[in-house]
Amino acid sequence: AQKITQTQPGMFVQEKEAVTLDCTYDTSDQSYGLFWYKQPSSGEMIFLIYQGSYDEQNATEGRYSLNFQKARKSANLVISASQLGDSAMYFCAMSSPTSGTYKYIFGTGTRLKVLA
Amino acid sequence: AAGVIQSPRHLIKEKRETATLKCYPIPRHDTVYWYQQGPGQDPQFLISFYEKMQSDKGSIPDRFSAQQFSDYHSELNMSSLELGDSALYFCASSTSGLAVTDTQYFGPGTRLTVL
Image (cartoon, rainbow over all chains, first blue to last red; front, side, top):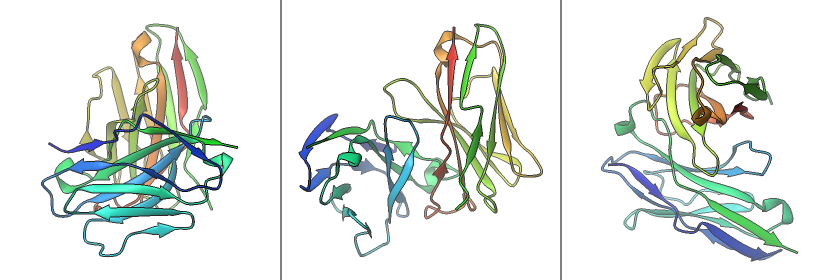
């Protein structure tokens, strides 16, 4: 069965420091996509970064990078130089052929609080 | 850049009433997904459409139905509303929904409250 696991319900980080949010996944598919979304208290889901299972390089988007370790089935999000505006809920999601139309399966999320 | 539009943003209904949620995908996106996010929970897939045809179905109650129209907008119809239907309903769109590389872009959500 396909599954996304986020083991950190909540995390704190000091402003300007880096933080890593953990995500592990389970799938029997060879081809799949891993995504991270940010959900502020206002509720919208903001796309941050994507990693394909065949991508050899870790994805980066500005202050966001994805530490992809395929053998360990992990896709951790790294946020560098945290800002107060980074305080939000973060969801890891996966799409894969087994899920049919590549709908997302989400983890339970990690609530990040950035401290001034 | 154009984003996914959802309307209404907030909706308050009584039990047993009906509700219609609308979604306008990003231009040239032909795939629409609907998700339901209960309080403190992760989003759960309800249903999806590709090129105006239903492409997949998740844990969507029989009281709910949806369709995608010729202009690619989609509507989620909910009847006999129950208290447990109170949630944030997201619509997301993607370019084809046929590859793992397709990123889904989410609308702002419709917050439904059933009293």
